[in-house]
Length: 114
Image (cartoon, rainbow, N blue to C red):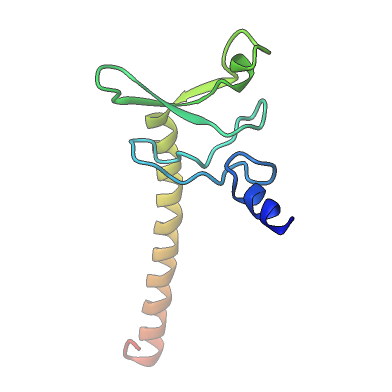
């Protein structure tokens, strides 16, 4: 009984493990981290173009199950990855700037950096 629970927990795509898949190689920065806003399933990555150099995030679960005529959604990876990178980069730059201001303030008060 306990072994069955462990097997169920470790199964990819099981209940409560929607995004438990390991990140894989490829050009998609957010691979394995996104959910479809329509059906709630994990988005996959599809590589298009000659040599598969144009990745897109894609949810085709409803179409694959015969419940819809087209995919729930698809978005080019380069567009979404760039937007997320900019947001995260902006966040870390803000944190770094605050840390620099704090060190400068401490140096000014004490006359030396710690």
